Length: 182
Length: 182
DNA sequence: TTGCTAGTAAAACGATCGTTGTACAGGCGC
DNA sequence: GCGCCTGTACAACGATCGTTTTACTAGCAA
Image (cartoon, rainbow over all chains, first blue to last red; front, side, top):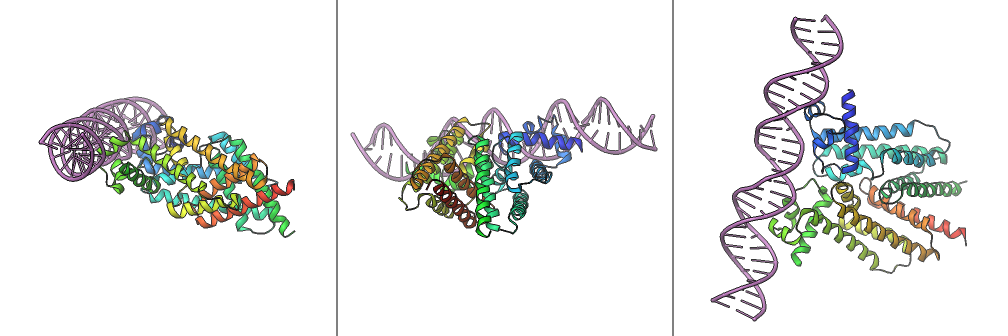
């Protein structure tokens, strides 16, 4: 089980840097020093490894979000994004990147990403309700748009700038919504 | 020159639907009914075709933005995005998708996308200054984040919902910035 | 006519791909 | 001792990849 984790971790770094379909299994297994035979013992196929990497990535990120109980739940979303980008690099959302490349060939991966994005949206909605005192689906979606926008933009401009601006905008939207019914 | 354009148009549809590296040249050339020989006469390599597709896409989108002189330059950004997604499908920004997949192998494509995003950011900044009466780099970046966020989110949720919410948020941010010095 | 251009069809190139088979080494429980 | 599990090394599989070669057709200009 330890080997399996190190395969996923190494493959995750390669996919992050070089994309999904442009690298062979040898390059994917190089960081973990694994033989191809072991890969197929654990995962059965390359696509299944990709699936496991996405699953691990998302679980890891959600665990990071759930790990703390912040005073400002919405602003904290972007603080966590900042930490994530610093640790993993800023090359766009790996889930969406994979989805776009496997849309035509792997229904499993498409379904996985759909579920993951749904789970993430619900977490944002929960935080918005926490800070607003009531549910606001539109505001939650707008915060989510800023989050996805910052993630995408961070691969082009300075990540700190993008995330900081997104955070400011999100808090302003929340304040405006609070004022509407205060 | 007519044949070249039809190759690019057909390849663009395939890349949009199936990604960049997961499809062979035969599938890429199928929509335009082109022989492989003709592809290499025109472009020299598959990567060069990808480059040409990205170039064409961005040029097409920027031409659409420049084609009209709207009363509300910022809101119009999202109206144009709506039109674009209706016509071309909502699967995320093709430029960023290509960049993430060719980051490790084609410096030309990476450089092209960087330049294109810079040009797009400048157009947004121009519109923000038009509607605000003064330059505001941070606000322009926030509008851009909402735009990129809506583009990415439209591949997961209903595009009309995502773009509409992004538009509302952008206009609210503009109004807030206008109020600050009104 | 001659020649040039632009295109197609089909086969083949070498390289690389994902995947499997075989043989072997070390560790751990019995 | 024994067998079992996990992993490695290495070669090979067939398939597919991007690319090139050759031969051929149609149109258009001189």
